[in-house]
Image 1 (cartoon, rainbow, N blue to C red):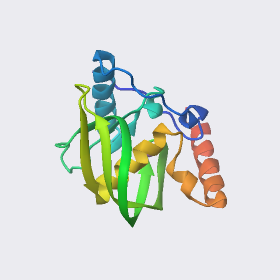
Image 2: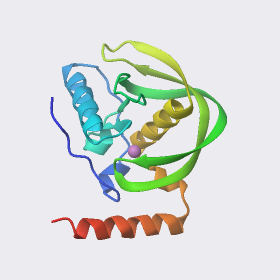
Image 3: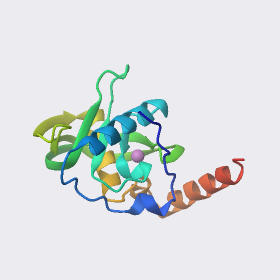
Image 4: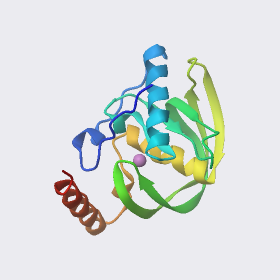
Length: 167
Ligand code: NI
């Protein structure tokens, strides 16, 4: 297991469209384990492979209070959705910024598990929001893209300032 380095906005590598995983092999299983470890250490409730500079369609999620519900989705796809929910979101790639974003309230998602077997899951509320947020990362999309241009500029400035002061 290893801790991976998380890329920060506005790093252009976060804008890459990740490629589908063709075969779920040991490399993918190790990646998923490392991503879970990195997510828990951060700490966060979700992480997508492009955030650790791997352009593959893999996401990990755990919305439990006590790290008891790790979930891995390989090549996730949203099959159906219902309702809307507005939640305050943050992102490990956009540190210390929290903003309200509107998402689907319930989703049906299909993916492969770490044995390469397809499965479907119905998710709602925070789990549904988190999965949508992570799938966005696979398409090079960040939650700040849902905000106004003005807000996004302000966030960019703030993060660039923070970075300059990190020695
Ligand atoms: Ni994120």
